Each structure stands twice: as structure tokens, then as C-alpha cells.
Amino acid sequence: MDYIDAVFQAAHEREGYAKGSATRILNFLRELELDIDTKLRARIARLSERDKNNFVQGRSRGQYSTERLTQLLAEIQALSVRWAKITEDNIKLSAKELAAAEVALQAEVMAIQGVLGPTVSVQQVVSAAYAQPLMARPLKEYFKDQETAVKRTITNALRRSFVSGETVDEAVKSIIGTNALKGRDGDLRKHRQGVEMLVRTSFNHLSNVATQEMFRNLGVRKWRYLSVLDNRTSTICAGLSGTEWSVSNRRAPYPPRHQNCRSLAIWGDEPLEGTQASNMAKPGQVPANLTYEELLKRQPVAWQREQFTALQWKLWRSGEVSLRGLSDTKGTRGLTDGELRLRYARTIRQLGESRQAA
Image 1 (spheres, one colour):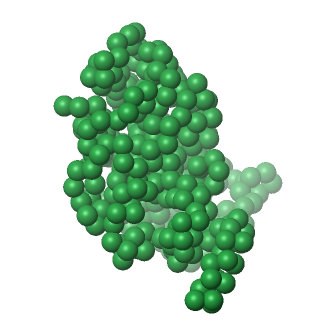
Image 2: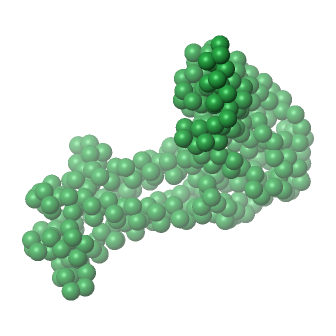
Image 3: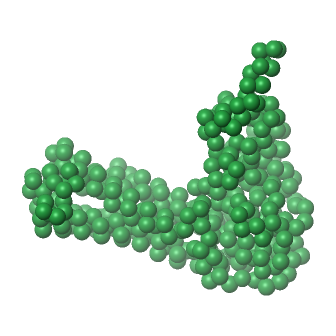
């Protein structure tokens, strides 16, 4: 097995591990929702019409507060805190297992490349992953966001139910959904989707931090941004595909660059050897050092056009703008068509003029 094969096989196994971890967390969260069902029903049933009106208008504290409202607010807060804690605790637990696997993997792939030296500890990787921002934010903030968002969702769902005059049963079901659909018809469903996304993204973050720590320990000087070669790849990662960066550059665009990012950082002191798989319009094995942009140029024109907006296609097809130019300079998001028009106004004008002349 060569270096690239080992890296992509590990990435595939990590996806499976992330899926299993997300399923376990979601099962815990569903148990939490069902556990709070009885308590929430009891709190809602005790509310007077005045309590409900004050709750809807945001006057549930201070002079407008009653013991009944205070207890309801406490239940909402408790559910929100426990939701975020279940997610965080389980991701932390999985992170240690994943870090151990990543450290072993990096030692193996470095050995394949003939690079030997000191490894890093599991705790070093986990600590670095929490210390290093995930998409420019501390990982802990994502869990705090969950707490705030869940609290807001429950509050808004109850306000809607009170205004509509729904029964206690209808009010609770609007939040946690029905057992028949396993909660997929409740307002909290969108936060379950967010949990799955956070698990996948944070695991990729941890994997790439393990790679960084190993690079630094072994004295590796350069690394490459490796994107998955398929039509699910974002504009950001397609533009960064194949770019080289110094390991010492703390501002380098290490993946993940966005939610659900699948890109990888790989050792880059020597030219890449081997192949990697592509499932574009012309699928198959391609050279490991082939960038996304180079491969895209080999695809049928009709298939290429489907990957762009009309304006992106015009700019890229003209050769005036690379895939990298379709994202912001920090490599954190793709530019909107409006931003592209501002940035490339002269180029767009020239393209229009040349078309009229033709």
C-alpha cells in the first residue's frame, strides 16, 4: 500500500467511525427528549392563560414571573444544557479513540515515505485539536452554540403553540416529534442534523491536527492540500487542491475549511507518487499529484458547466480566473456572484465586449 492509498483508506474508515459516533450521540439525544417529555407536559399543563401570554411576549421574568413560569424556564434551560453536554462529552470520548488511531496511521504513512522520528502522544493531539480553531472558532464555542440554539427552538415552538391554542400534547410533539417518525417531525430535528455535521467536521479537524503535530515533530518542511476528486467537492477545496504550504506557516489553510469538509493535509517534502480515485464524468484512477482543476479541465464541457453558476463558468472557462479565484483570499468561503462581479468587473466587461465583437 502506498502513501496516498493509506491516507484515503484511513479517511474512508474515519467516515464510517464518524457515522457510528453520530448515531450513538443521536440515540442519546432522543432518549433525553423522551425523558423530558413528561416534565415538559407537566409544566405546560400548569400554566395559566396569563402565563402563556407573558411567555409569548417575553415577559416571563421579573414582575411578570410566577413559580409556574420559573419552573418551565428551568426545564427548557436544563434540556438545552444537557443536549450540548451529551454532544460534547461523546465527541471528546470518541476523539481520544480517533487520536490514537490517527497517531498510529501517521507513523505508518511516514514510515512508508522513509521518514522516521518521534511520534506524538494522544493527549498532545487532543489538546492541540481543542486549542486550534475549527474554521476560525474554538471547538468549545460550537457546543455553546448548540445550547443556545436548542433553547431558542424550544422557546419559539412553545410560543407558536400557545398563540395557536394547541393542546399540551400538540405543543410537546411540535418540539420533540412523534415516536412513529423517531422525532423527525419535531422542531429539534434540525439540531440533530447539526450534530451529525459537527461530528464529521470535528473528526476531520482532529485528523488534520494529528497530521500537523506529526509533521512538526518529524521536521517535515512542507505539506499539500489534498481534495477529494468528485462533484461533491466545494469551490473552496477545489481551488486549494494541490497547493503547497510551509509547516511553519500558522496561517496556512489547513482543512477542514468548511462544514462537512473531507479534504486532507499530506506530507509534501517530496513529489507525490501513486494514484487516487476520481468519480467525475470520466472516472478512474488518476495520478496522485493531479490537482482538482487539472482533472476538471479533462472532463466534458457539459459536465464542467454543471459544477458552476453561469458567472463562475464564464470567468473560469475564459481562463482569466482559476478555481482558487472563486473563493475569498482566506480560503474560508466561496464568493457570491455579486462579489465576483465586483472583484472581476473589468474581466467580465472585457468578456462581454469580446462576445459582442464576435
